[in-house]
Amino acid sequence: MLGEGITKLYYSIGEVAQLAGEEAHVLRYWESEFTQLRPRKNRAGNRVYTNDDIDLVFRIRRLLREEKYTIDGARQALKRQGAAPAPESAEDDLRELRDFLGKLLDRIKEGG
Image 1 (tube, rainbow, N blue to C red):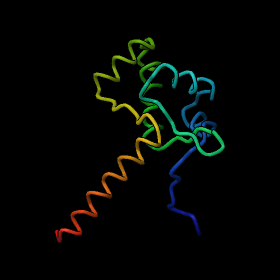
Image 2 (image 1 turned 90 degrees about the vertical axis):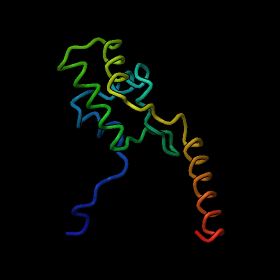
Image 3 (image 1 turned 120 degrees about the horizontal axis):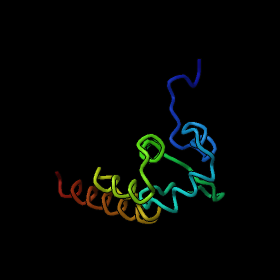
């Protein structure tokens, strides 16, 4: 069957909310409380979650729902666990990619 084994790169907030067993407004609230949770937005302005974003949603959910942390306690726990902060914007990612490709091109031109 065509499409089997293909995983999506991006998920909507509704899909992530359903996966996590939370309402979409809860995920939006978590974005305001946890700086690490910053899903990008597509051209239409809709949030698009990556697998890393979804993993973080599940970590936050576990801390708050199962381990009964407060928001502040969960924030501190994520910092202790080494949750890497999400990039501030797509522009930052594009600059990093441009710099990387520029360095790669320079190496190729130098012959190695």
